[in-house]
Length: 536
Image 1 (cartoon, rainbow, N blue to C red):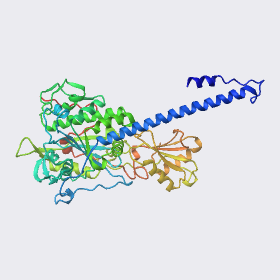
Image 2: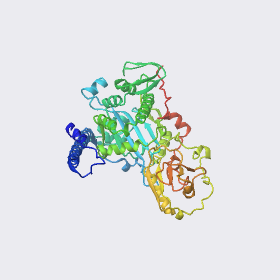
Image 3: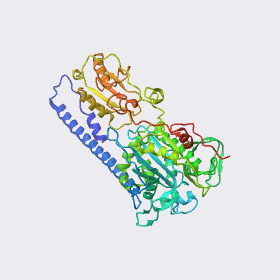
């Protein structure tokens, strides 16, 4: 390579006195060009090697992670819950754009296999139970999510199940909800479906060692306790206030019962909510899922202790699911603990609070979040409009241009969490007569307010015509934009669905009735001030 470089340096500069095609300069120039071509060929070869190595690297990790992921049947009941007399699973209804909500059962298993799991759990137990169980609901427009913790001591009916080895497990009229995992995660899914009447699309199960490794991978998370905790059973040792936990301390924080409040499983779920909220915030702050290298590293770690339902047991399917989940703004993720009442035959168990629980599960089954997102725009807040959608205000002076007279290109940018939103509105505009409308994504998915920009004063009337057609409120039209088109419609969370502003509201969160909200200890993943009550 150094010889070729010096060869290029020897090529003489052209002199005004010597014609470009004359004598030695011509030969030297030809030699220089040949050497330059050789350099380009070497560089091209290096690029092929680098790209080839990158592809091989990606292929290696794809194979490795794919091999790590364990799949299992989504269902395990001999008779599906919807076919039982007491079933009645509510089937979700697609929204106006054909999108469906996603319901996932998260299972943290207390299986303790010989080796790493046993050292973390303290003893070997290969049977395993659902030590942590959460029902995750993501709305159809991906604008909000609700995560309901199901106490492991909850007493519910268990259906007859068969595991993936063909072993049969008889039905039980009442048993601890976490015991269904003995027949496999599919039986756990059907038990939750039978109890909640909510259709579950997927499950994700992780063991003890996975919790430790994932926490270490993101560098630990911050948790808070109201006073110092020293629990000899879980080995949790934390000072009062905020601490960063990693590894076994993170696991101890998630597992301890005696360290929090009255020592029951109900207060442990609040600690789990705080931990998960902190983990979600950290991953979003670090843009972990947006960085291919970090995402690959995290997926490799997670896959070693992960079992999912067969339809998503691949890298590509899990990436699709991750991309769906990451669209939900952190402030719009709501945690709650299922309300319960004492189980009379055994004071160490709890029973469902049927009245309150039915309210929560009915909202989830019908694709309604349990609390209003904190990022909701005042213009669309039901609190400011008496519970009714706000009526659109005229966008200003009516445009003198008819849609068919607008010749400028119109670009609709999707600044929301709703998949395909820009294309939907572009189609609406074309149907209205704006022939040159098209839709693209946007660099951010947390735009709050929809606005129409014009790049030059001569396009102001065109922008106004677009705003009028969409019935956007006054003040929506302004100069500026990113220069990608003469007219740019940047769609925000206040216009996440519908063909005209506020005429078809997005997935509308609903506040829980006071009794249910109080009993469920509702918390937001975006709340950095959460602090778990330590035991007295």
